[in-house]
Amino acid sequence: FAQPALIPVGHFAFTVTSAPVNPSDPHVGIVAALSHYDHTGPSVGYAVLGDPDGGAHTGVVPGLISTATASPTLTFFNNSDTVANVGLVGKYTGSGLPNLIKPITLQPHESISYDAVSLGLVANQTVGLRYDSNTNVTVLAATNRAGDADGTQANTDAGNSFFFGDAFINRLKAGTLYFEDMFFYNPDTAALPITLTFQFSNGGVSSYTFSVAPKDFGHVALHQLAAVVNHAVFNYFSIMATAARPFSTTMTHYDLVLAGGWGTKGAPLGPTVPLSAI
Image (cartoon, rainbow, N blue to C red; front, side, top):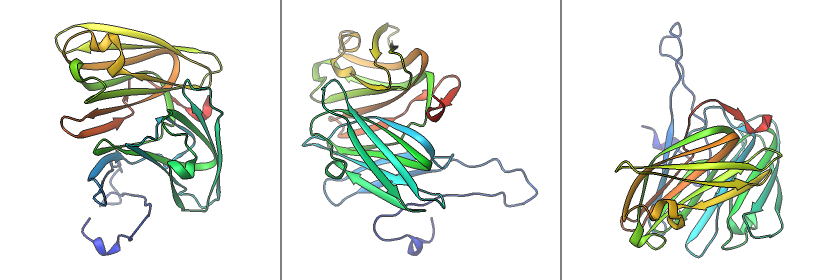
């Protein structure tokens, strides 16, 4: 971007549009991504793809946690000309805590960010979040932790199969220097068994099956999972997450040896369906 004087100072949101140079040419579209770096404290950063659909009426953030070393932020953006009335519901994973319920109002073209305090998150508890809105909104979930950060757009679709191609855990340092977590949402009205299949770089294969309750969230800490850490000391592997019915999933990876981390929604293998249609 060659015109930095046009960039606002402080908190802002924006849209990116494109058109063919020659109006008579077909418009094939673009891919847009944003990298974000914060040097006000410990230097952290993440990169995230833009939302090509301009948001959705319904979406989920399958997993967030607020701790002494993890600071999450949830940013809502209403790119429409209509006031957005958003209902946000959070469910804590395996804790028995009451649901988090928070109504949010966004004026046309308004962006609002919430930290753990303004969201009302319970510390040290993993929470999954679902939002439903009367108009399309985009939601970005980002967390500063362990000397770096991760950021992903909210999941607005569900599918039966997702692929994660890059994972690594050192068994001797799993849970102290290496952390890999997967988060899941089951939009169905019946419990959903999900199978994780791990393909290791030395040709080995293992799997783990678990169930996510109806309209609920699930969390699997790979750095604590025997199907991963009992395989070898240095575990390089990919992950296939599959189920008989659609679900949504994200993954975070933190390597404190390299002081880095990232988050991703994975690659859907096969058709997806909007969460608003389930």
